Image 1 (cartoon, rainbow, N blue to C red):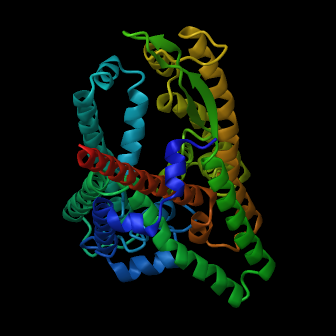
Image 2: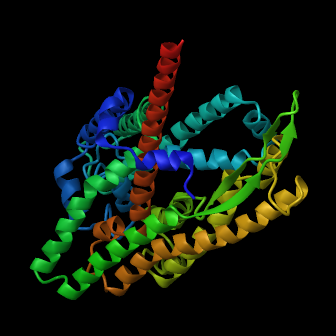
Image 3: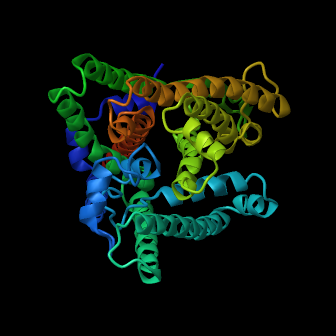
Length: 455
């Protein structure tokens, strides 16, 4: 049976949206921020020979081909890496820093204490995350600057260019992080996620055009192109279905008698548990780890021993070892990250404090054990689902014999589709919640006006 809020949400219309002025302002602010982001992806880093760099990147040279680090970064940055723009690093250093801080919050006592210290503690942790973001962004920017110099894409190589590139790229990342926080506070949806979504969506038309262009020149057969289209549509449908799936646990509240002999309580509600509680964090983290050997290989490939070059080739993008490790790492990080998203002990304690209980389960430790039991099984199904969605397209592309360019492969891959669909669903849900809140406010005002007229 649908809840009251769900029934109210079903009655939403364009007239309701037209009256929600606050929501319109939030959406307009979000659009303006995304426009600023897209403009920044076309402003190049000073000192880079864009003619030579763009040519090598387009032809799939060492700087951008092979499905390596820059190609992966280009997908998230909306083409900023291909143009070596000031937003080339995007918000990936911030996401990596957030993941590291989330993992550290469960193992370092001082951070655990800060996490439990309320709003002030969370602000301090966010500040630490920003510091770590600067460090990671500076490290990645310096690596990119050295790589550009080694490939001959710089007019005047040297310390001055390296300092300029690091300051520009780190500044772009910090500016995007600030924009994301502003969207979260004053816009609609999660700002950082929307920035990544905007980058991927901006590159999707280009990838689709490349698929049809390859088919037109005969490099891609009609059957393979049809398989890509069907696979993309099927994956989107699967992602939408699973991301909306929930395991609802019935929670009951006992009746209690108050002064005057009146009985209150006796209500029931549901505790929703998502099938994929980890979201898109496991594939992002797994792909980042797998890209480390490839990134290191770009610096040591010429001087490395034969066995090192062999290991790098075995774990290269699309190889069987890469796909196997990718699957294992996704499943591992699903189980590793979910306990930081949903904590059965805290949930059981909150239920006990508010008088709620699961039918047939004793409050306290038994409830915590049961929640952990259910969560483990949901996480296993969710991990298999995420691994399937992310690995299947890359396996199919690897079997195509390299007929599909890495940029197209990554944009139609499972991880990019997972990010696009998940962020879109979350944003739509937030828009719907704002409209529902607006309707509730309207109903409350009408009821108050009716009481005043009666009086």
